[in-house]
Length: 120
Image (tube, rainbow, N blue to C red):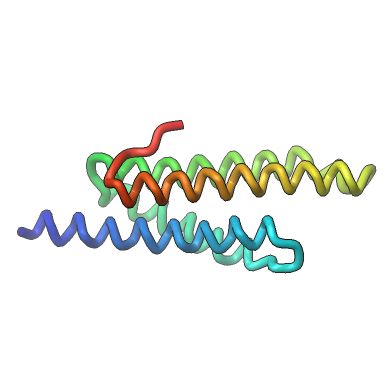
């Protein structure tokens, strides 16, 4: 019985984290709707803290979101110089990264809803 309550708790936390990531991802794609950094940090902290509480297929979702954020951050940093030299290529690169981030978050939400693990 207690294990079921823990599973429901981590499942709910996982949904909250996905929703925060989704808000960040959508705001990154829509110009002028930047909600990003603060919400992303909150979601990342939730994932890092609660990852140890998750078991089975739900644990994969916590790792998946952490990896997604880390890869997106590295890609944004890697393409940052494009903004200083060429605005349009920088914008294109960040739009592509943002769409990739949004895709990964939506894919994770679909798999979470189906109670399936995510894989890279």
